[in-house]
Length: 279
Image (tube, rainbow, N blue to C red):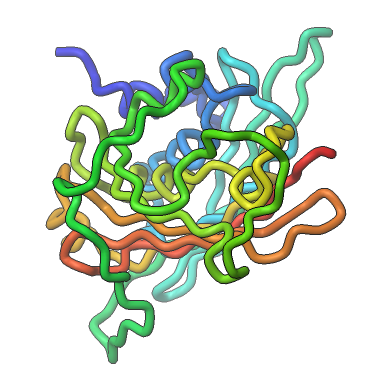
């Protein structure tokens, strides 16, 4: 039985020096290199599968320091410190270059924790939106392969149809807002690795704020995991509501924040990105 394309992309093999060998696959190709979310998901899978892993993922920060080429790469991963209920991880990915040298293409940190029942409150309720079956599927550009891995149904902020370079005239609080229902196109059940990938589902907010098709790419992404394994099991292969908006666009960079909820209104992750764009 063949692996789901998501799980196939997350395959890693242990090396004699303790590193992990993986590969960026064409099934997740982006405009340049692989979809950043699949790389983040690979790191999450490597941590949760690690024999020393304590608890469940709580946060992940990934710095995309260079473009990752399709093909093999090496993940270096270690637990920097383990406390009573938290564990801190550091990692980097290296890849062979055209001239035969090896270079770092990604760095990051992660935090796992043994979750305990405590006071709980949700100050970020899910927006009131139409249910998934009432929202049409967005036809994403076929030139980007990873788009076909997801089914997306956008209420607001779909990819611009006219690239005229004119700033969006909506109020600032909604001018770069996107809201969409999303799920794996083959019905794969949600897990922590899947959440890490889905947190990167949004196209660059600068394209929505000012529809000019300039080169843009995530420099750093942080994901905070609010759901535990039991809550993810309830999501299964269903939809999640994904919302993102930009905040400050200046000097070739902007930041965007996002949140994902289950259909039942449970907040699953919040995320923040710093994105480069070229003029």
